[in-house]
Length: 213
Image (cartoon, rainbow, N blue to C red):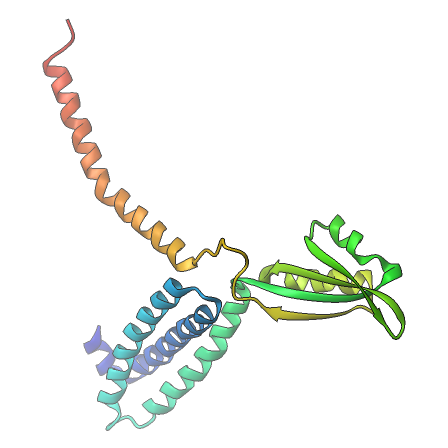
């Protein structure tokens, strides 16, 4: 594979560009995982990032003396990887966000949000226009856009802010541990399958040799 890429300049350029997109996407996940306290996920992303980067950087340095444009492709892949990483992370939307809502008292936005199964805390407040409801909502990041649209629909004059949250309660599940657990269970099933089949085969053979009286 390496020999093929070194002999075909265009294939090497494409491989470098796509590899840089991949490792920068993973590095974006790593940075966000560190901020959100997902230590094992950050470690996994860091391992994969460096693994890809070492191989790509080696190819670029080896070919740089004869292909100066390799550095341009390398930098372009880096920039594209940053944008791709942010887009992918936004679609996956790990973690939670804190939404603070200021709404007019007469709208009674709390009851309407409760009807849509949102959990929240309500405080009474006052503004220049009169009494208001101050509402605090902690919601999964995948559902923030839906909540904002609902707030706009219920009270077009409502004011709300969105803040990042590092942890919610004591049940803080690291996606890296979840992925690692599934991977280990899958590997365990692969390893134990031949052993289970072997025991079943030999037990069947013994039953045939010694039938019950």
